[in-house]
Length: 152
Image 1 (spheres, one colour):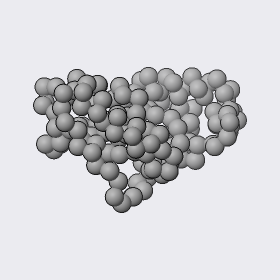
Image 2 (tube, rainbow, N blue to C red; image 1 turned 60 degrees about the vertical axis):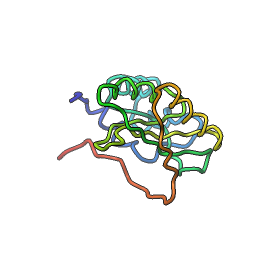
Image 3 (tube, helix red, strand yellow; image 1 turned 90 degrees about the horizontal axis):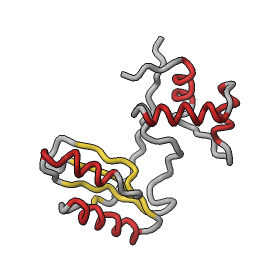
Image 4 (cartoon, rainbow, N blue to C red; image 1 turned 120 degrees about the vertical axis):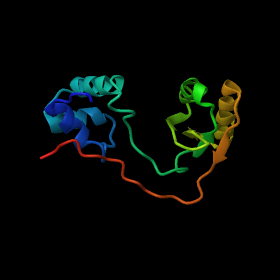
Protein backbone atom coordinates (compact mmCIF):
# COMPACT_ATOMS: atom_id res chain seq x y z
CA UNK A 1 0.00 0.00 0.00
CA UNK A 2 1.36 3.42 -0.96
CA UNK A 3 1.82 5.77 2.00
CA UNK A 4 -0.11 9.01 1.47
CA UNK A 5 0.54 12.14 3.46
CA UNK A 6 -2.30 14.39 4.64
CA UNK A 7 -1.94 16.68 1.60
CA UNK A 8 -2.21 13.73 -0.82
CA UNK A 9 -5.34 12.53 1.00
CA UNK A 10 -6.91 15.99 0.89
CA UNK A 11 -6.08 16.24 -2.82
CA UNK A 12 -7.53 12.84 -3.69
CA UNK A 13 -10.54 13.00 -1.37
CA UNK A 14 -11.46 16.53 -2.32
CA UNK A 15 -11.33 16.15 -6.09
CA UNK A 16 -12.42 12.61 -6.96
CA UNK A 17 -15.67 14.28 -7.90
CA UNK A 18 -16.31 17.80 -9.14
CA UNK A 19 -12.99 18.45 -10.88
CA UNK A 20 -13.10 22.20 -11.56
CA UNK A 21 -14.23 22.80 -15.13
CA UNK A 22 -12.16 25.83 -15.96
CA UNK A 23 -9.08 26.63 -18.05
CA UNK A 24 -6.67 25.95 -15.15
CA UNK A 25 -8.33 23.32 -12.93
CA UNK A 26 -5.10 22.53 -11.06
CA UNK A 27 -4.72 26.19 -10.11
CA UNK A 28 -8.24 26.13 -8.65
CA UNK A 29 -7.46 22.93 -6.73
CA UNK A 30 -4.19 24.45 -5.53
CA UNK A 31 -6.05 27.52 -4.24
CA UNK A 32 -8.48 25.34 -2.29
CA UNK A 33 -5.62 23.36 -0.74
CA UNK A 34 -3.26 26.28 -0.09
CA UNK A 35 -0.65 24.91 -2.51
CA UNK A 36 1.04 26.12 -5.68
CA UNK A 37 -0.42 24.87 -8.98
CA UNK A 38 2.93 23.21 -9.83
CA UNK A 39 2.82 21.30 -6.52
CA UNK A 40 -0.65 19.90 -7.30
CA UNK A 41 0.52 18.80 -10.75
CA UNK A 42 3.72 17.28 -9.29
CA UNK A 43 1.78 15.35 -6.63
CA UNK A 44 -0.78 13.99 -9.12
CA UNK A 45 2.01 12.93 -11.50
CA UNK A 46 3.84 11.16 -8.65
CA UNK A 47 0.62 9.40 -7.58
CA UNK A 48 0.03 8.27 -11.18
CA UNK A 49 3.64 7.09 -11.54
CA UNK A 50 3.29 5.09 -8.31
CA UNK A 51 0.08 3.48 -9.59
CA UNK A 52 -2.10 5.06 -6.90
CA UNK A 53 -4.07 7.08 -9.47
CA UNK A 54 -4.96 5.70 -12.89
CA UNK A 55 -6.22 8.88 -14.54
CA UNK A 56 -7.00 12.51 -13.80
CA UNK A 57 -9.80 14.15 -15.73
CA UNK A 58 -13.47 14.71 -16.08
CA UNK A 59 -15.92 11.88 -16.72
CA UNK A 60 -18.33 12.54 -19.58
CA UNK A 61 -21.56 10.62 -20.19
CA UNK A 62 -20.92 7.89 -22.81
CA UNK A 63 -21.38 8.86 -26.47
CA UNK A 64 -21.89 12.54 -25.64
CA UNK A 65 -18.54 13.77 -26.90
CA UNK A 66 -17.49 11.21 -29.48
CA UNK A 67 -18.20 7.49 -29.35
CA UNK A 68 -17.19 4.68 -27.04
CA UNK A 69 -17.68 0.97 -26.54
CA UNK A 70 -16.86 -1.76 -24.06
CA UNK A 71 -14.86 -4.62 -25.54
CA UNK A 72 -13.72 -8.03 -24.33
CA UNK A 73 -11.22 -10.67 -25.38
CA UNK A 74 -10.57 -14.30 -24.47
CA UNK A 75 -6.82 -14.27 -23.83
CA UNK A 76 -4.74 -17.34 -23.00
CA UNK A 77 -3.51 -16.98 -19.40
CA UNK A 78 0.13 -17.10 -20.44
CA UNK A 79 -0.41 -14.10 -22.77
CA UNK A 80 -2.60 -11.97 -20.50
CA UNK A 81 0.15 -9.55 -19.46
CA UNK A 82 1.48 -9.16 -23.00
CA UNK A 83 -1.95 -8.70 -24.60
CA UNK A 84 -3.13 -6.38 -21.83
CA UNK A 85 -0.08 -4.16 -22.37
CA UNK A 86 -0.66 -4.06 -26.15
CA UNK A 87 -4.32 -3.15 -25.74
CA UNK A 88 -3.71 -0.60 -22.97
CA UNK A 89 -1.09 1.11 -25.18
CA UNK A 90 -3.70 2.03 -27.80
CA UNK A 91 -4.44 5.76 -27.44
CA UNK A 92 -8.20 5.14 -27.64
CA UNK A 93 -8.20 2.74 -24.67
CA UNK A 94 -8.96 4.57 -21.43
CA UNK A 95 -8.91 1.55 -19.15
CA UNK A 96 -8.16 -2.13 -19.49
CA UNK A 97 -8.67 -4.79 -16.83
CA UNK A 98 -8.70 -8.52 -16.15
CA UNK A 99 -11.90 -10.37 -15.26
CA UNK A 100 -12.51 -13.89 -14.00
CA UNK A 101 -14.34 -15.24 -17.04
CA UNK A 102 -13.60 -16.93 -20.34
CA UNK A 103 -13.59 -13.37 -21.70
CA UNK A 104 -10.84 -12.32 -19.31
CA UNK A 105 -9.60 -9.00 -20.71
CA UNK A 106 -12.04 -6.08 -20.86
CA UNK A 107 -11.40 -2.53 -22.04
CA UNK A 108 -13.17 0.69 -23.03
CA UNK A 109 -12.43 2.36 -26.36
CA UNK A 110 -13.25 6.04 -26.93
CA UNK A 111 -12.86 7.87 -30.24
CA UNK A 112 -14.16 10.93 -32.04
CA UNK A 113 -16.71 8.88 -33.99
CA UNK A 114 -17.99 5.35 -34.62
CA UNK A 115 -15.44 4.79 -37.39
CA UNK A 116 -12.62 5.61 -34.94
CA UNK A 117 -13.96 3.03 -32.47
CA UNK A 118 -14.13 0.37 -35.20
CA UNK A 119 -10.58 1.22 -36.33
CA UNK A 120 -9.25 0.98 -32.75
CA UNK A 121 -10.89 -2.43 -32.25
CA UNK A 122 -9.36 -3.60 -35.53
CA UNK A 123 -5.91 -2.40 -34.39
CA UNK A 124 -6.35 -4.30 -31.11
CA UNK A 125 -7.11 -7.48 -33.09
CA UNK A 126 -4.17 -6.91 -35.45
CA UNK A 127 -1.73 -6.20 -32.61
CA UNK A 128 -2.73 -9.24 -30.57
CA UNK A 129 -3.87 -11.76 -33.17
CA UNK A 130 -6.99 -12.34 -31.07
CA UNK A 131 -10.65 -11.53 -31.83
CA UNK A 132 -12.29 -8.64 -30.00
CA UNK A 133 -15.93 -8.77 -28.92
CA UNK A 134 -17.58 -5.33 -29.27
CA UNK A 135 -20.16 -4.72 -26.52
CA UNK A 136 -21.82 -1.40 -27.38
CA UNK A 137 -23.84 0.44 -24.75
CA UNK A 138 -27.50 -0.54 -24.62
CA UNK A 139 -28.48 0.95 -21.25
CA UNK A 140 -26.61 3.56 -19.24
CA UNK A 141 -25.90 3.15 -15.52
CA UNK A 142 -24.07 5.63 -13.34
CA UNK A 143 -21.78 4.09 -10.75
CA UNK A 144 -20.00 6.40 -8.34
CA UNK A 145 -16.42 5.15 -8.15
CA UNK A 146 -15.21 7.71 -5.61
CA UNK A 147 -13.80 6.17 -2.47
CA UNK A 148 -12.99 8.13 0.70
CA UNK A 149 -9.36 7.96 1.78
CA UNK A 150 -9.92 9.42 5.25
CA UNK A 151 -10.81 7.15 8.12
CA UNK A 152 -11.89 8.45 11.51
